[in-house]
Image (cartoon, rainbow, N blue to C red):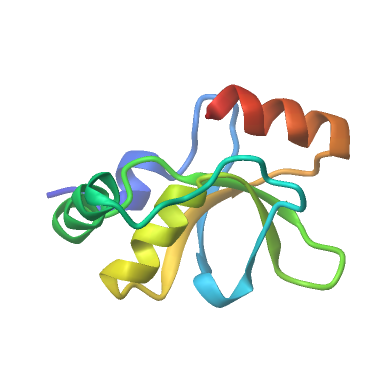
Length: 107
């Protein structure tokens, strides 16, 4: 089986997928979508345990260190519940307006 990097190391836009410790992730301030620990989340957790995270999250550097999650809040929570310590992400430099648009478009 191919590694995650072999399959997803570089996306179509030439961005690199990297793994970031969950402890370095911060929620997007004012994130309007709620992540629930419901039956659907348990299905996501089981998928993450079996297959890993198939689609990386999108983050931006956080002003106080670490990264702010723009897209991938459910995957982040599923990683926590699955006992993982890292999550694959794409790091982008985004202003607030662009980050909000991307967050809404991906949800």
